[in-house]
Image 1 (cartoon, one colour):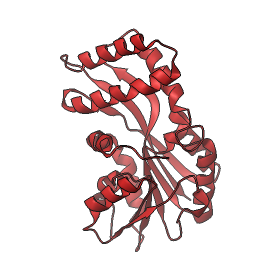
Image 2 (tube, helix red, strand yellow; image 1 turned 135 degrees about the vertical axis):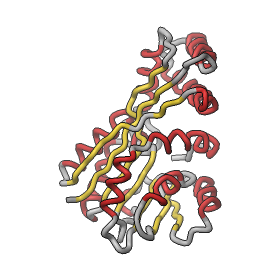
Image 3 (cartoon, one colour; image 1 turned 30 degrees about the vertical axis):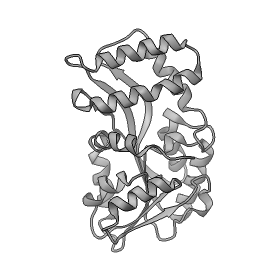
Length: 264
């Protein structure tokens, strides 16, 4: 799978940081607090957003491995974090879960990743985690909900169409899309993990205009590919939504969920 554009990852960074569920991060910190030599593997690391969000909130001297298949994103992550000697970088194709470097790892982390993955990949990941007694913190998985304070008659249909596209192959087989967190929870619960799920929505207003514009423009191609609506209809809806960003009291909510699964 090819990586996301680093400019998009930069735009979504503040919304991601604000959305992460603090209680789950606190639970993760408590779980790691008694460990003398904590090791975390962040998969699909992008430019290192999970490290930036968690590193200062976790106890002790955590050793991080940042893993991605996109060499350009790994290079950017290393450029941003290179002064920290407790961070290593690794290129790896996540389709190959069996050789994921989990030896000595206490927790795997991932942000905005598993909604792109298939059930088959998630099942393989759950098996690896269970075999190594490794925890999982999987944050910011899209849950299928988008809502705007200024409505349009097509909003519900547009979101349904986008959710259909989210279930197409993103490089890891047929994607789970909005069903990812529920699937992970089921797989890990049946393997004996303690699982907690919390909501982590983006809440965007006039202060996040650039992110809203990028989000809407990013919907265009998926909607055209589904092709249930005409291009003119899609462009009309996008034009309305872009116009509405500048209106008083305009806001947009995009739903996500965070999951923490720990061996018991």
